[in-house]
Image 1: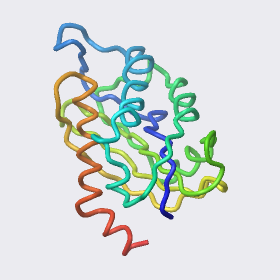
Image 2 (image 1 turned 180 degrees about the horizontal axis):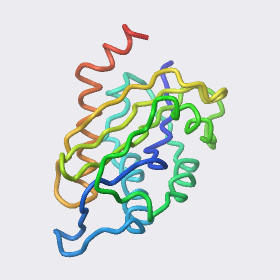
Image 3 (image 1 turned 180 degrees about the vertical axis):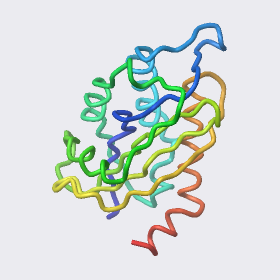
Image 4 (image 1 turned 45 degrees about the vertical axis):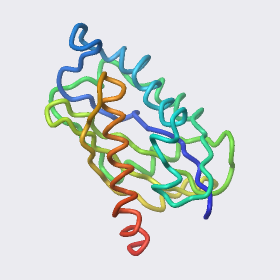
Length: 184
């Protein structure tokens, strides 16, 4: 396929590990802050700044369609009392199919969809772990699901964790896309 549909960052089972702060340490971030401010901000940033989050280049596609409506709705249901933890969470690969089955295509009803299913943003290790997930939009069948880790970097809460997403996209571009292409 020469085109993919970006569904966004899936935080529905994500854990924010450790003490997160906003405004340079002046104010601790709560689960409610994550749900209402930061999660929507991270998802919007990737679509707003395609030059910094180059999905076309990383996935070797001529066109990327952004379809964030479904993901924004799913992420709006994150439980603010359950997402902030002190021990990393784990998403079993077997749960991914059920998560993808809840995605609703708004823009394109067929083709290949991609989401990053976030497992942890870990303040202690300063890393994000996530599943890069490709799926058939029409059937919701998961085609490729690979776990990756990226080092957080940048200034401010939004950019710091977006830096981990950017690092993962760079890894995909440098080595992983070629590896996956031969593997699958």
